[in-house]
Length: 289
Image (cartoon, rainbow, N blue to C red):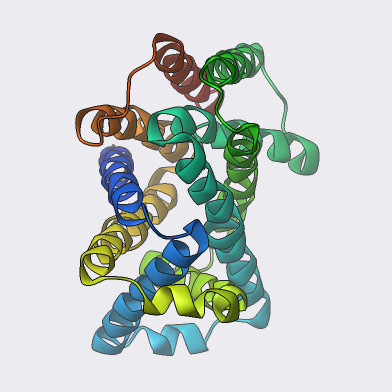
C-alpha cells in the first residue's frame, strides 16, 4: 500500500510538473523554432543531471551498465525527447496548448497497442471502450481545427508525438527492472541531448540569439518538465508500473489546457474541451484495464 500511494503521488506530481513546463515552453518559444527550444532545454537538463551525478557519485553506476542497457536507454531517450518532442513542440507552435494536449494525451493507448502486438497481451472490453473514447476525442478536436482553419500539419505532429512517447515508455518500463530511478532518468536525458545534437549545426545561429528571458523560461521548463517531472514519472513507474503511472499522469492535459486558457489567454472552445475530457476518460479506461 505504501508503494502504491507513493507511486500515485509521484505520477500526480509529474503531471503538475509537465503542465508547468508546457506553459513555460509555449511562452519561451514564441519567437524561436521548436527544435532550437528543445535543444536548449535538453542541454540545460543534461548539465543539471551531470552536476547531480558528480555530486553523488552516480557516474560509477553508469559505468557498470551493460552496452545493451545503455543502447536501450539511448533509444528510449531519443524517442521520448527528440523524436516525440520534435512533433509535440511543432504541434504546440502551430495549434496551441489547449488544442495539442487532448491529442498527445493518447500515449497510453499506443503503449497498450504495442504491448498487444509485441508482448502478446490480451485486450479487454474496457480497452476497446477506452479506444473508442480516444478516437472520438481526436475526431472532435479535428473538427474544431477545421472550423478554426488551423494548419492540418499541427494535427499530424500532435498524433505522431504520442506514438513516439509510447515506445519510449515501454522501453523505460523495461529498464526500471535493471537501472535505478535517478540513473535512468539522468542517462536518458543525456542520451537525448546527444541525439538532438544532430540538429545543432542548423540551429546554432538561432541558439546564439536566445535572449536572457527566453533562456530563463526554457531553463525553468527543463527543470520542471525534464528534471523533476521525468524523475517523478520514472519513480512512479518503478513503484507501481506504467499501467498505473500512465493514467494518473494523464491528468496533465487538463492542467495544461486550464493554464493555457487562464495564463496564455488561448480562446476556449467547447468541442476542444469536450475532446479533452473524452481523451482523458479514454486514457484512464485503457490504462487501468
